[in-house]
Length: 542
Image 1 (cartoon, rainbow, N blue to C red):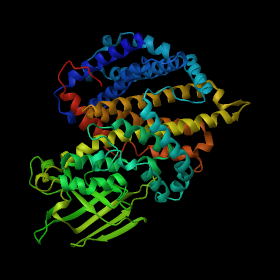
Image 2: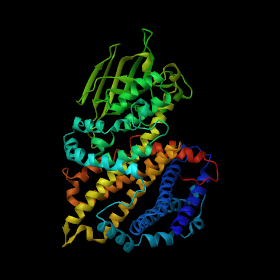
Image 3: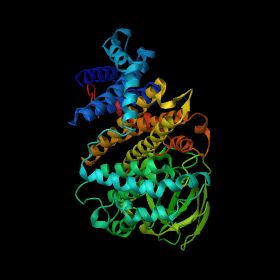
Image 4: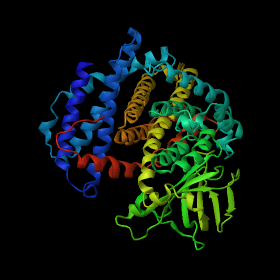
């Protein structure tokens, strides 16, 4: 893999020159360049992760397969990055002479049609089986347990949940409760499964990926909201608040929703306007205003709500606080709840093309009063809501990447199965070179996103990895749209039929680049901003 690493490193160095040229600029002045920079950085970080992965010891066949997948992914990545930079080199402070570094010879060799088709044939012989993942025994057992649950309990219900726009049935939720799924982000001292002395983001990623392979809408997102709320409470909650809410989160009773987005703000969290004012009675807070895209708000018994307690704060994000709102669980597409202290909360499910089962709600708080201890951190938490929310969102972004990986795996498996069975012009679809080339690129992308998500999780478990969580979300979620589209295309006309699983995967994938930080916001305001502020000379893409 020495040559592959050299070419990837040379491309990183080239991109760093472009980054240094833009450094110090306001990201809004160079949005197009910053967007390309963010995606290129994400792809190269994944490429470096793949090279590291390919070099881990394995038996001869597995090692050869890993190297083949790695070369294809890295060649595609190098071609993508060079394409972005060479299309308008002056925008990145480059000229045509900067691109003569052996990259073209490398991509030409690795992406030859015969090479891709040969890798596709290997994939066929393996029946699509992924290469060794190097997760270790404990995480492999988790993968097996939750993968089997998804196969036995989620897959049989997934189509009906989607086509009939149903709520997730209790048999799925109860089964996950029995497995302790909701306690993965809650420390053992509060009744969860997470060790008290360290994080286990990797375990969360593995479980999320397997459940999403069963169904994104029916299972893959169930543990994201508990993780966000648990992280926020652990970051800012009082000890009594942690003792009150964390054990219930761990049990999955109540279920949890997160309410941040508003009709007029979208991903601009700092501009949240829903007001929280001291209640007239002098004890508690009155919430007034609207929220939107609050996933699982109906069935949830607890909603974590970001609200503005100080309208005059400067900068504005310092005027935000987090509140825990308790309510009865509702199974329908609409609900209303009157607070015992006064006011009403109403919700209505938004009709969507995919990602059904969880259901995202519009909420309206009409003078809804919550007690004083509903404020996370109580007095000390006032004005700290933005920071607590961001603490939770980092894990949510990583989980979303894992969801994308699970969805891609499901689409790839269905596509390969169909291609083997479907005969066109006297040959199976899988035997044609173009199909083989598609399969090769699809699996190389899937494995790269998986390995990058595992690497980001390990980094988060070590106390770092915030940027990596955003990077892997960028690449994996966009990849999921492409992989599910290719899976649909391999199915031909049947891919467009609603009864086909791949049609569901395709519409489900579209949401991934929108929630937990829209693609553009993430690329510009998180990744791009961080890269433009980075000290010159740093080429750490991990």
